[in-house]
Length: 284
Image (cartoon, rainbow, N blue to C red; front, side, top):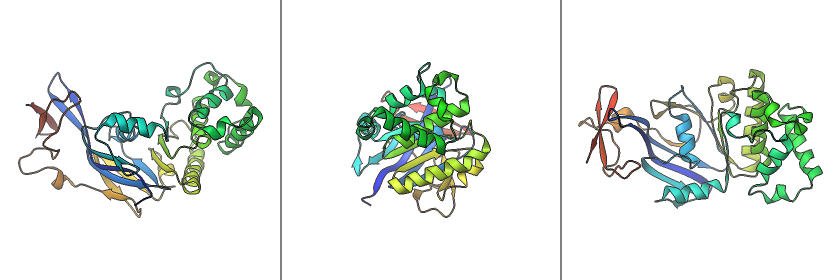
């Protein structure tokens, strides 16, 4: 158990629509434990909660209920978790334009981003940094001449590989990829999967990714589907997953099975009642 880096226990995320007092329960009691060297690939249709789950793990989105443990430390404050996880995590978003600094040279961009909380990279000379980046560019099939180009002039596929390179340069314990092949040709999906598996095992990283690509998801032993807020299907993987069933989540009173002391982001205590396919709030 000492190798466990992140543990989620009964995580819920609920989005509210105040205009019609209706709520969307995106995550419904997600529990999972991830240890050093684990890769988890999360699949599922658009809107199934994949990015929501990534953002909660990354400290970008507060869950409405549940517990998070990080390196055996339990958190009562999500702000404290957010600050701690940021020190050891690299987050690669689905849209490369959300990560880049426009109109800078590619090398300058990577040098600035990868020097943050990375003393090993900071100590390298400029020539050593260039050689390191070129080696990674070769793995990702990026022309080395792109290093001296304006990052805003790259194609979306090139941009996605450039920000992917950040994960290979930085020495983060936890790496999160949101759809890392969404702008890549299908022949690169297998290559990306091989690289992810390699860095997880050889450097004992925890890597969490989402994808719609069957080619990419087939690269991983631990591939789990998010469906209607639940983990629905996982094959021959060894991950510690508590897969709540619909019968366990809903009780005979037709109330969603969240803790009695559930509060929204403004500390308003609420109940949720399921009517048809919707959830309606009863505020106390």
